[in-house]
Amino acid sequence: MNYLKVFIAIMLCSALVVSCKPASRDMTPEDFLKIENEILSTDLTPESKEAVTKKYNYTLKQFEDFAQKVETDPALKAKVGEIRLQKMEGIQK
Image (cartoon, rainbow, N blue to C red; front, side, top):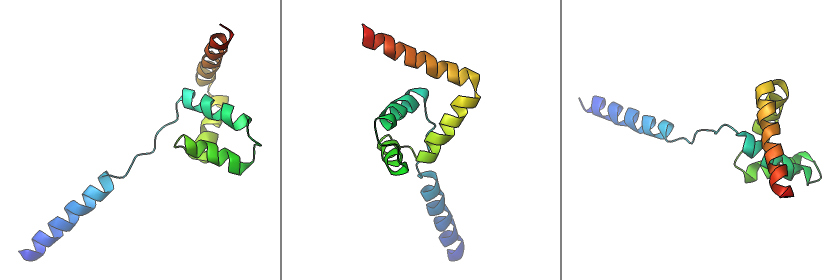
């Protein structure tokens, strides 16, 4: 009986540890544009890109994957273009 209680306690602790692991976020088009604009103002080395993406709590791989997704998905590409246009119009006002 004591072994059963210990086993259940270990299982509960394990479940708690696994469930409290922070989930990786999906990048939004707005975050993508912020990161992209900031990366373009650096020397474009992988180290600089990594530093910028880390500043926004993303990995360089997440950024590159999202950039690839933007290039291949016409709807997402249109959304990113629309956001860029809105920002440009806001600057010109």
